[in-house]
Length: 274
Ligand SMILES: [Zn+2]
Image 1: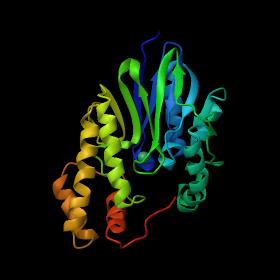
Image 2 (image 1 turned 60 degrees about the vertical axis):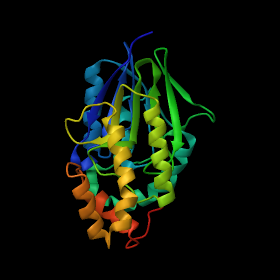
Image 3 (image 1 turned 30 degrees about the vertical axis):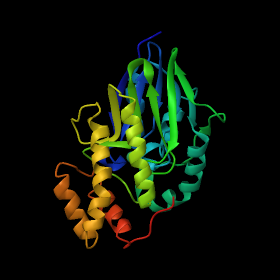
């Protein structure tokens, strides 16, 4: 059995600086998530071509567009690769696509021409394979959306949790009730209990190590949120409290995630249901 290796490919800020992951065997590879913009998707294609590996699978972790939107560019370059996701994720993408297309018209030629959802994996599929290595699908579970999934590769103790985990980047609570945020915390504890050696977060500050520090940051940030919400007078106050508590945490999109999450938490803006 080949020992798998991985390559994290960070997209540009226009694509929300998300991590795509190329999981590599000796001859074949799997791509976890595809970029938001066509330009970033072309850069991912270039990395795959340079690897010399045959792309066998494109797996989408969840329904946020920075993790699938310009998949068409990758699919055109590698037409033999299966383009798949958990059936609940596929349904969530079809539900949210009209919202995303209405919101992101300013992408122009850098946006997908024919945005679409992956094919659903057969019901009950909980394992993918790459050159004899088992790749377990964890979830769907509550993360920054009710249907996040993660991939767990036991042979190398590697966790690819996409947006369930951030490292020194603020979290997205815009679609979550307080109860769902509490459930998210339990899921992070479950991921920590796997005791992974490698963890590649969906979003991270440049230069962060790919280890359990991402899980620990996410756990601490989720734990602080309800405490700060209880103390804050309004969203401006909540933003200041969180910035004081996590002074190193950034936001690739000019505080959009923190501002919107704070407004939803303080009842100043409606919770998103996309
Ligand atoms: Zn993301």
